[in-house]
Image (cartoon, rainbow, N blue to C red):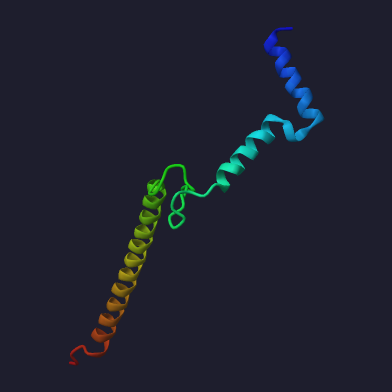
Length: 103
């Protein structure tokens, strides 16, 4: 067995015997200790963004949403115009029927 293989095997055996000494446990404890250390200015802590793409990363989704709203508004306006035009035609027919010149 190579030296590297023996070293990895020894680490694995130590990790199974004592989980607190495992590389993952040491790494997580290092992360915890670095997270607990106060920064230079407590009034402005470091903040990590939740999205990996940064602010404004969902431009495609926003464009699709605005397009859908504009389409719905246009369709509603068209239907309203059709309804208003039909009502105007009915009113004109009624006027013509009741107000036609009598002979």
